[in-house]
Image (cartoon, rainbow, N blue to C red; front, side):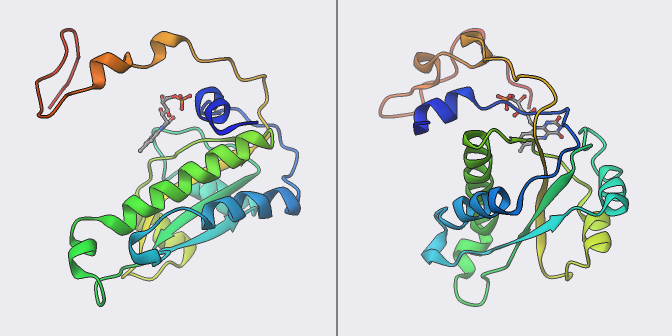
Length: 182
Ligand SMILES: Cc1cc2nc3c(=O)[nH]c(=O)nc-3n(C[C@H](O)[C@H](O)[C@H](O)COP(=O)(O)O)c2cc1C
């Protein structure tokens, strides 16, 4: 699968089969994560692999807007880079880098026929459940599993048209019909 196909075909998956993810597949997914870019190549991330069903249930309760019934989940832990790179820390770059690692995870998983989602989480509760130190952040939990149903293709209208997103030389305002809620 080429990169463009993976980018355009990937769907968020909410319903997963209970079949386990083989270790070699999991390894390939984390292998993709580690090649994400990061400020000064600090690689400010750790990945917690969760398969324990009790822990998965507890985590699901920390994600009120997500469906987390996957056989496996990856918690993305973000490490601070304050001491060496305070400016980059202050503008939030460890989290930006973590989000790039998540995209790599999602695309690599998709290529392997594995579905993923981004769960928005109550961070303090998740940190407590997973024993994550206070000074670290937890970005998201990614439920991972084989999709229950064949994921549907995106409609072209699922995204804004390219021309509506482009501004030239300066910010020239939002295109007509763009709905933004501030
Ligand atoms: C930062 C972020 C937060 C998200 N939070 C949730 C969430 O809480 N619950 C959920 O079901 N999906 C969540 N999603 C997934 C989006 O709803 C989904 O990506 C979007 O609807 C587009 O669908 P697609 O990924 O299939 O193209 C999140 C995605 C991102 C990037």
